Amino acid sequence: MTELTIGTVLGEPEQAVQLDARRFNRHTFWCGQSGSGKTYALGVVLEQLLLRTELPMLILDPNSDFVHLPKTRDAASAEDAARLADIDIRVFHSSQRDGERLRARYIDMSTVSKAALLQLDPIKDAEEYNVLLHMEEHTDRLDTDHMLENLRASGDPGMVRLANRIDNLEVLGWDLWSRGEGAITQVIDERPRATVMDLGGFAHPNEPKVAALAVLEHLWARREERRPILIVIDEAHNLCSPNPRTDVERVLTEQLVQIAAEGRKFGLWLLLSTQRPTKIHPNVLSQCDNLALMRVNAPRDLAELADVFGFAGDKISRSQRFTQGQALFAGGFIEEPTYVQMGVRITEESGGDVRVPLREG
Image (cartoon, rainbow, N blue to C red; front, side):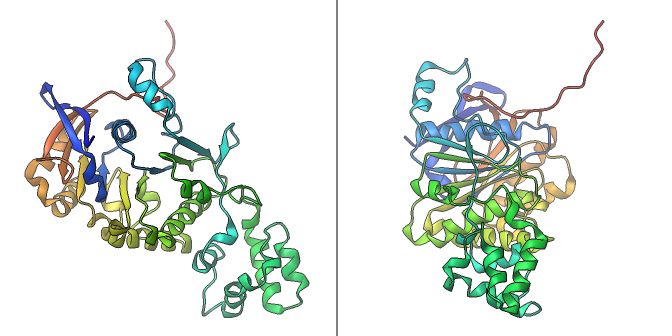
């Protein structure tokens, strides 16, 4: 089955709108300002992909919006509820909640990523970088629980300096590291239908970025296997900025630029969701062939969208007048640019706005 019913034609509630599931083998850009219904509407499409296809999805979820994806709402049909119950959906949490924990293996990351994490420059910090470069030759020093002790015991000045750097940055104390337990990359290799990475509960601001980097570079390293996966990145501006500020952000952005440019032929397909297109690296945005646009008011953002997604014509400007749940879909996954009133979610929505406390009486 290739058709995904996502809602109805705006102003024509009897006419269903369908996306061509086969065309998610191109990168997709999903955009809408706060309050437009962007995350809820994205959930509608992800549910349909789960129900109507066999496409595995990796969902990078910074606000815990999709942690209830395995739970159907009471209003869902019995058929949809039964089908979703049989789908392998795994949710991994970053915070101290019940359920599976989100963990990555430090030793599995590339030297470039480790160097970014440790703020090492291959020229300015040549000696420490060289130690890092050759650490895989000394497997006895890779255990995160004993790494500092082993490096300092070596007596090598470069290893001692590297140990002090690691200790001072306190990176080995992060909750992210697996410490001998299972890692998220192992789960992704099993290709569940949906793997949700709840990134919002980590204590250090770099942890969610390093978690994302660990899985993205793992997928890229195994790209020649050509095992399709849809990589959904909510609030993508946090991971794919046009102006990365830190070494980790720079390496992460470079990895996403590479996937955007070359990933399609290997079955690595992006779905990027954000509030503003100008906050996404232009080399990633320009590679998107599908557009889902909800309410956007900023003239600069509308101009950027019109420039990148010329196939949508002048329909983009109407997004300024959209109300919540209304969207424009254009590109390869729909026959022609279409205004849509999004349908109802099948699964439980997490997150949502916090209500203003009101006085009773």
